[in-house]
Image: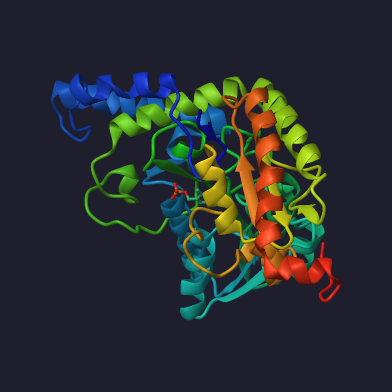
Length: 395
Ligand SMILES: *Cc1c(COP(=O)(O)O)cnc(C)c1O
């Protein structure tokens, strides 16, 4: 038996999404830019996908731009808003310390171009308030970018309130909603969102496809030049099978959102309650405003990497933080941002669940994880020093 508990890294595709893709590989395979019937059939499919996705987000079809995924959508959103700001002489950007690297590294690039980037602290619970954003906005602020939900620690941020503040102050608001789309309600009008990124493979759709929603009137900067696809803002022949798979997956996720969230959060809460009994451990992220499937812990005295390898040997696929930072020895910037000391940040574990996980799997994880944590602690010199009082416990 393999337990897959790494749905924040990527998800298994739903059979609905797979079935929705197949006809666009061998039947309707034309290029939507072609004038002939085969091309026009593909163009119609593309338009229908755009309309269906727009309904899920509460926007107009013409406000949907297809991208290669969440990273590209984040890059294009931030660069576009920065260019718009620059033309008005506004070069101050507000974001948070625990964004995904697709946002943080793009912001570093903008800093090199003379933008001033202010990263708001996220506190111990890992969140920012609308008041923090309001206090940070200046006359020369051109962009606020705050993620909807954090991919490592699961905190859900008050994007609707932040959107309202930005709208009142006339500042463009982008949200990286890659972890939220298909899992939490999105209504870009009501939440006053100007730019939003999502990625299909985080809600049981295919990999390599995503959406940038851009409110009408916001001129996007072209990152990929070439043909006139996506209203001239993103060249390249459209990946129709993936787009159809994404539309089907998003509709399915939105249709079952409440039921899935209820079931998954019950599993999450059982896991959190069980793992909290491990001594010298701490839950990461906001305990209340939390993604339905996210369980994130720090265990003192162990190495997250060793924990992952031992769990994998016992059939449990988990993560120590984000898939992107695994393989590097630096502790996660997210855990450091919520104030975990380096040595504690190294002992992190993220389990991310979906509606296909079962209560039996949760019971199995609750049987295995405490054993493995204890096994690793008994081998750790740091743990021995702490037990003997030579070194103090942090958690
Ligand atoms: C996965 C993820 C991304 C990147 O999306 P890709 O489609 O893999 O490029 C960006 N932001 C967040 C919060 C994510 O979880």
